[in-house]
Length: 293
Ligand SMILES: C[S@@+](CC[C@H](N)C(=O)[O-])C[C@H]1O[C@@H](n2cnc3c(N)ncnc32)[C@H](O)[C@@H]1O
Image (cartoon, rainbow, N blue to C red; front, side, top):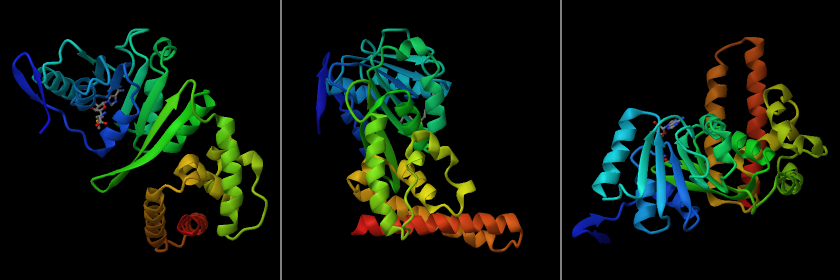
């Protein structure tokens, strides 16, 4: 077992699961890091022990997790290097203190709100590592629209769940324009597998177009396809990430379950909504075939 010896006290290396390990792998060496929603502070403790970073600030807005974080840091003898602060989002951070942010394990909408909670602090941020749970496409699109570059996106499986991890950078990675041109190529390939020949509407490839795709475009399979390319992840589709198949299959099952529950009702709007879900399943089946080829 790996141990760290400091001041004659033996400290165990903080072990991370696959999700936090993946997040840790994107943290640039030597950076000043803030971990927002740090909970037990496992991530900063591990990064300090591994000497990836020299200093960290952990923030949590709930007293229970804040106290757990303080306790972990104390128990590992790292109080000089990790500061734990109680507060909302970026509010407890001062301008210039950090240039890397990790925000993991919370809803995508909450992450987007946190990113707006202290604009002066954001001016200094060079790397953003985000692990949203839900609303992943909104996180991806909103940051690209704000001229962040998507340096990497990956999927990681842990205890039966699959998580998205994004690394955005100010300087390196794919811009919105780069992603849109990848989507154009993907949409052309995938349309054939989904069995429709109409030209995919290129205007809808634009990030802003995803909001309108879906419920109101029941008969427009190309809109549904574009929605799912943004949702599943253009870079992940580009490299046919192995875990995508799992996500696609689970989404199909979920939609089928909803349709089944809907067939008990005969109301016209419900029938219409079921038709929309059926169109989504059709597109997802096409994506599945394409992933398997
Ligand atoms: C599920 S835990 C995730 C912990 C850790 N980041 C991880 O990924 O394993 C989410 C934590 O974020 C904290 N949190 C949620 N919203 C927050 C906010 N606006 N500001 C600071 N902390 C927040 C919660 O109190 C909780 O401790």
